Amino acid sequence: METQPQHVSDRWWLPPLAEVVFVAVLLWVLVGGQARALLADGDTGWHIRTGEYILAERRVPRADLFSFSRPGAEWFAWEWASDVLFALAHRAAGLEGVVLLGGALLAATSAALFQFVMWQRANVIVAVVTMLLAASASTVHWLARPHLFTSLLFVLSVWMLEADRRRPGRRLWALLAVAVAWANLHGGFVILPLTTGLYATAAAWAALEPGRPSDWRAAQRYGLLTAAVTAATLLNPYGYRLHLHIWKFLGADFIRKWVEEFQSPRFRGESMLAFELLLLLGLLSVPWLWRRGEYAAALLVVALAHAALGSVRHVVLYVLAATPVVARRLSAALEALPGPWGRAVNSLLTDFAPGGPTRRWVPLWSAAALALAAAFLDSGPARWQVDFPKEKFPQAALAATEKQLVGRRVFTSDQWADYLIYRYYPEVRVFIDGRSDFYGRAIGQQYLDLMQATHRWEETLNRNGFDRALLPPDWPLATVLKAHPDWRLDYDDGQALLLRRVWRGSVSSAN
Image (cartoon, rainbow, N blue to C red; front, side, top):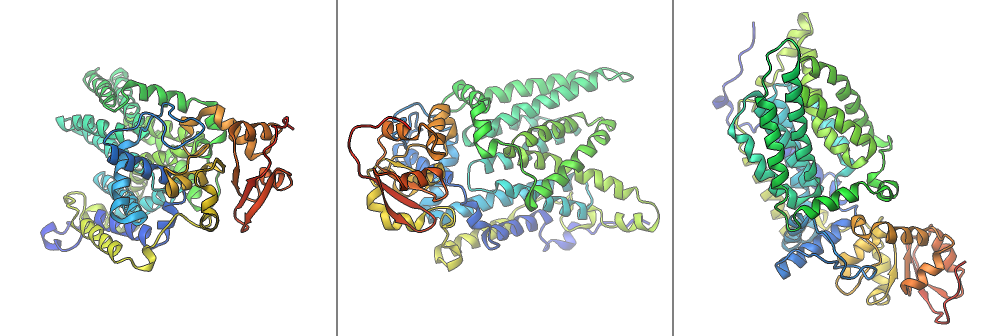
């Protein structure tokens, strides 16, 4: 005999499971050691300063703000709305506020993903396990940067498409508003028209399937939606030129070769093992989806699996698309178990869980958790005094040599340059920073020549007028400059070297 679900009103005091997920992930970020990890990428620094510029000038920049290598050159601040939000968080509570904003986005993404899985009536235990796998795999890109908005909006968009596929309605057109917001928050908005295009393709395939009457209405509807959301993304400060810029950037061989996050994933560490498991289970689920006629979900999993294997940046998108599919497939397999084991598993179906799929998620507990965390920000307990990790950024070197850096032409790593922008902008301008789409191949190649001390290193140093070098000690250039008569070592703490140019004679020929 099947157990009837307990009535929602009898357990009103229990939070929905999605709220439990939200609070648990938020605590994991803020208390469990992930707060420092969110600031492990220096790009957060220039995002904050860009947002502060926009708030002060009340306009979106169209020319470079931060470099001396390309001063005043055209720049697409394509994440300007995210930059403003990070700047507001920083203005309110410093880097702690930025971490809280990043943690809230990660928690909301995890909670939305879990609720999406529950909405599809997956087994509650399977939903919890797959959500934990997804969270673990996603930590590869848990950074306080604008791509966190893409993760959340992607989950919500796929959910809206799936809900419409099952029961078409006008609510689908809310994706136009999502497209406009997304195009101003992060360049990952390009995944939205690609996803709706896959739904149009899947609907057309279904209409052509032999043995069933053709119905092209769904294909036409999703085709029109794809055109509409593509047009909606043009509502950004740069119009269609932003799309051309992104296309050129993503197609650049130099970027794919040298920028680490655009390279293929390395299957090492816990997060990559979780991704590997979800990759295997997701691809194994594709034939099951195809037999059920769920062509859109199948195409999306395959397309994003291909993208994720080509670039670690796309791992998170694959995980978010595959987790609901994997959870449903595993749930179906468990439900099919015969005998006592099958009945035991079926007793754990989602309706049995507090806040099952029929319960509306009103995020009261989530709001209370955020309010409590914000209150702790104001009180400033020790665990909240976060900064960019001193293990990755030369905090001691900057404290000891600050006067030698301000107003100078400093060569340093792109990550340390991001930190210099955060600490000293506008007094310090940099040669290169994390905006790889802005600097392009020419400056990027000069950066690599210097970092690796190739035969052109001295010519490049002279041409750019560098008079300071803030370097990691294991760089080849650090070894070369320490032995060069025109450079003096002023500081060495084992993490960073500061070298000062003392020779002002005629420019020597390149080595």
